Length: 192
View 1 (cartoon, rainbow, N blue to C red):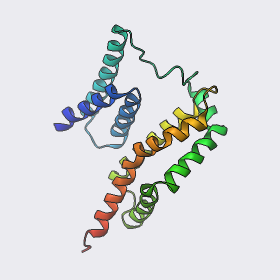
View 2: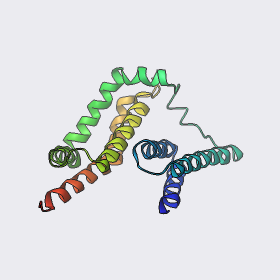
View 3: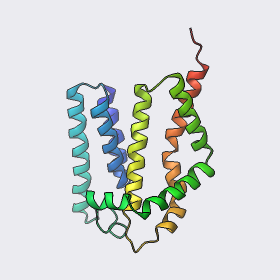
View 4: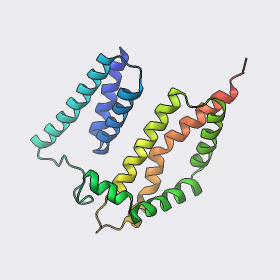
């Protein structure tokens, strides 16, 4: 019963916070629909509630004359073809250069999270809780990669990544914190 109230409230907060919140709420919804053991009627309720909240936000933005689109100054064209073309371009290498530099060389959570993930898989294998965490992380990372590699050619991607990468690393660090916590809990648990 609390899922029926809590998840729409979480989606509502995500949707109204920033434009990216709509993507994050759809990622969570996707994971819940295809990988959870929720009943079908709850899944249908969550789909319609999320679509209603997104539609309501767009309607409110249109009524008050606000821009409901993603930043049109940063993104010239957003389509699946352009996203895949940009992901498999030189922008991909620039993104990973800064991701590696700020993630692995300047962030303790990445290294300890990666080590914890390996230890966790050695002890427990891939259970459902880690599957949810991993899927959310991979889909979020894919969204961030697509968003940054789809930036307009007129913008300096290197400068944008130098400025934004710490924030992006901070945004995905809960994944590593959860893995570290889960690994510590498993290691501490006595085996019978």
